[in-house]
Length: 94
Image (tube, rainbow, N blue to C red; front, top):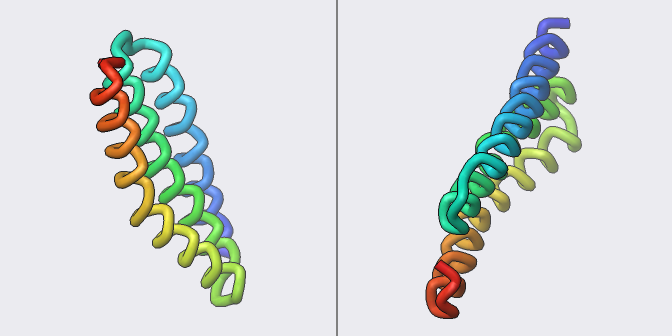
């Protein structure tokens, strides 16, 4: 019972962070700041949502798969944002 409440709280927090991040993307003017905001949304909101899924699932294969997806996303997310910004800088976009 408590794991459902904690899971729902994490999922709700992740959804709220996505909405706040979208507001940040719309508010910022420069390309670099928009990419930075999107990268933060991607990382922090995904952590919250996937941890919510893990808490709701309990000890199961679904929780193990969600943790694996979380680890892969945490490893590749900052690298992809960095590559996007470096390629944009080379092309003169920023």
